[in-house]
Amino acid sequence: MYKNINFRTDLADERADIYKKSNNIENNIDGIETQTREDGNIKITEVKITNENGEKAIGKPIGNYITIDINKLKVATDEQIEKYGDILSEELKKLINNHVTKEEDILIVGLGNIYVTPDSLGPKVINEIDVTRHILKYMPEVLEKGTRSVSAISPGVLGTTGIETLEIIIGIIENIHPKLIIVIDALASRSMERISSSIQLADTGIVPGAGVGNTRKEISQKTLNIPVIALGIPTVVESAVLVNDCLNLFIEKLQEEAKSNEYLNQLKEKDNYEEIKEALIPKDYNMIVTPKEIDELIENMKDVVARGINYAM
Image (cartoon, rainbow, N blue to C red):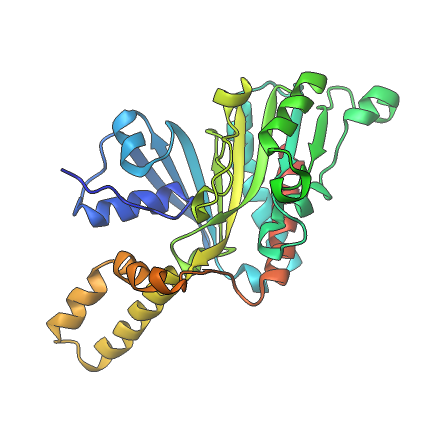
């Protein structure tokens, strides 16, 4: 009997790794297919959930998940940001082409609160999107024939609008009738290394806030009756994750001096997240944390995502 796990991460490949480690599984999980390839310092992992077993194992719907891992985004040059955007564009095109033709309408939705930096990715990307719907309607002669109709919206958050994001999107769909929605959101991770360094694409939609325990209504084909592609980047981790990762780094340092210490070897192999979380929660210390450079990281992430979406259109 496999363990039930509180993942506290939005990344499908991370969930699969945690599930395998927690249940001592060495081979593939039933119902989950994983492939990895590399392009220089960029790693691309494709996770395909094919049945209910895979769905139940990691708590993600049946569908396709693509994770692009980028190193050192905070010191990326303009040339590197362009390269990352181009790679994102190619992966995004594959998902888009699975669901709509080259000329069908797309609505892009930037989730999040622009006044809270770690949650501002979606709204900031929307400001950089090349929207064409109004131009096609009023000045079609200035665009190339076959230009796709693209519209974009940043609906804000429930706390400032009093309206669920899903309700806003349903209202827009009823008026402009897009054939596909791309939703952009900030995510949570179970690894410090993946903050602002991983981009996840999924054709299964999204449950906003799920990774940090602030779940809102699901945005997916099931709730909207049209395909939904979710694009997200981790910007936060729990403090329990931070402590667990720091503990591993500390153990590595000790192991350099005491490589034969079997206890330290076992401690490092174990995922101490649950024990650390149990120690922090009673004192309200299990906070959500983000890097001190998050302002600069959000700007770089925004540029990568906007370029990737615009080129994919």
